[in-house]
Image 1 (cartoon, rainbow, N blue to C red):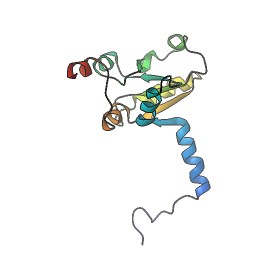
Image 2 (cartoon, rainbow, N blue to C red):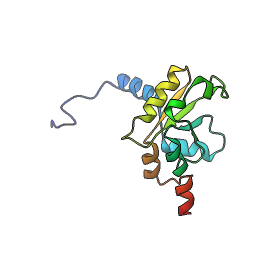
Image 3 (cartoon, rainbow, N blue to C red):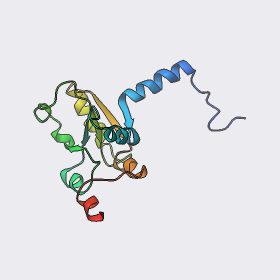
Length: 137
């Protein structure tokens, strides 16, 4: 039966394997970031690339704030060159994380994007840090 899903055949399994492996070299998700922080040293630096006010109001626990335009070699000098950075922004409606990842990659830094951003974090039911989170507590 043909429909909007089946009228274009799926890629061969070998092609799909390469595609999805490639995506996972560039992306991670909120649940994986949360799990990594839950066991201690996650092995990456989580970077909220939103503005300072947004970060102060609420952010993912364990994240640092480096707004996109501040992602410079000078700002990153304290981190070894092989440090993995995981970036996020407000959510799927925002391309700030893409811009941040682009800047980091342009500086020769390893980077992944946390898909979903703050929206994805909330959808998973995870708690936030920051002034807004403290006001609720």
